[in-house]
Length: 259
Ligand SMILES: [Zn+2]
Image 1 (cartoon, rainbow, N blue to C red):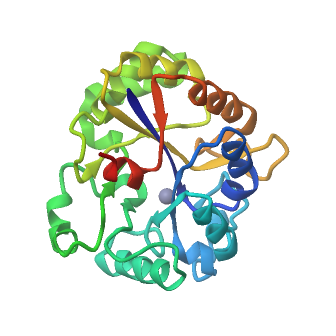
Image 2 (cartoon, helix red, strand yellow):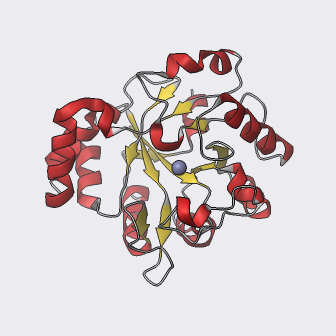
């Protein structure tokens, strides 16, 4: 069995409007790492910060509905930064809104600034059991020239093997770990590339697919930066993964708690 988790960063309104109905169609539950300041409006420059979006966040009411349907709501900071205060502020809001319980909320690092190299600096908050897990992306700049070159080539040629080489480091082989890497899905990532990576993954390993916006072609923000995925393409990907008997789709907290 191979485990695949869908993870969405920022809490953008299209996650509920566009992604959620598609996920529901295939009975896929996902993890949403929300910027709590985008949800309650205390972060007011969402449109500048998240270009491939409307700049608006999901509402607490929408998040509650998603939670009731078995999805996970976790933290991506209060104002999209990585300071301890910022992380704590977001955890408090999520608990206040009854979207997650103390100690069970995961954190995904904005811009993947907390990563395998520096997460020791955050041991305080981590050791207190405040965060259930730390989900990070791959910050290419910090992985040296080899990955930077591969990423550049991959970007233009959509090569399956290069995509696999870049993301090999992001396959979760040690099940039950605290630091969870993820595979960034950008607008240009093809379904073939994702399926090739899945084929190459050994049995009993896992990957987290990291999305931001899922947009329809006429949506504001479509094509504005790399951090969106076309809704038609997303629908096809969900269909393919949901019908593959060797793949189990689940939320990150379900994955960490499974027996
Ligand atoms: Zn983000």
